[in-house]
Image (cartoon, rainbow, N blue to C red; front, top):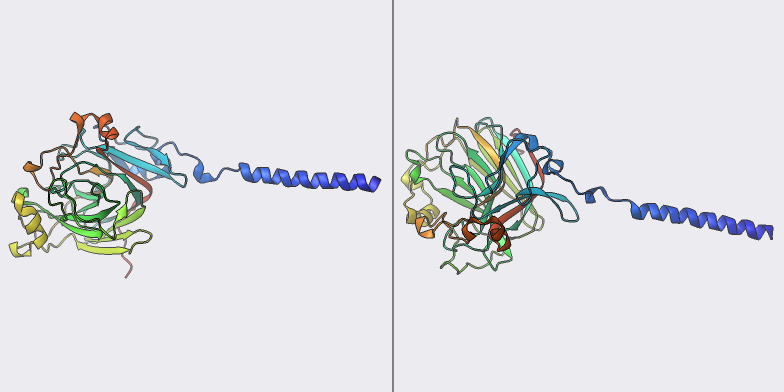
Length: 348
């Protein structure tokens, strides 16, 4: 009898110990499900940036800063993400007619000094309205190098663009010439990464080209790396299930110094607005630049007849931001892993 009681007590203790262990395992919360409050909790490099939001709000201190509906944190069940959201129509910067919820690097540098920026992101939404004949329609810029001297042109803009009704969109990058003489003749040369480049258009305002076979869907994660080292820009684009793409562009020596150097893409695309300039022989040599990152919405409410490259004629609901968000007239981009630093010698 005593042996039986002892055995029962021993069994009970063993079962209780196992149950306690199981309880601990099932109530432990994985670290990545703890929702972070501020974008600076997700991307700790925020002290190196300032921001302009789609409603005109500016801030030079992004540590422990957020603004609902424009710059905040979301969790998708796997990661915390920094959200950049901006309407088709809002308050813009002095030199642009497009809204942005986009950061600008505080530090400025020259091409020979260089710098490096990386980003892992997914585009969640682009405007569902616009004119398909206009190159900027249905697009958002997710990373830039921006000039801050001279013409203040952009040697790099990284775009995502998706036509309505398509599942897959395109990622491409543009190089804007540092125009010789008047900047009225400037243009962008566009290079496809996955999908189309900027020059692939619809035949009418609401007729779209075929969906790109190797495109990127909304919500599909991809990464880019911008590395400027001794005047040369090295680009790398990565996405699971897609070929990694790399590109090189000289920022201190132009390849567009004569009329005959102008690419056929530019002749086809920009002839309609009379832009056929050439570039300074030394391109962006000696001019200050900085990085930009976030959501720079390219789809605006301007009438296409005024500029068939950049005036997209999208719905803007008289600038009412709440109505734009409710009816798909906005851009939204999520970033979860980014770095910024000095340019580095590329691996050969």
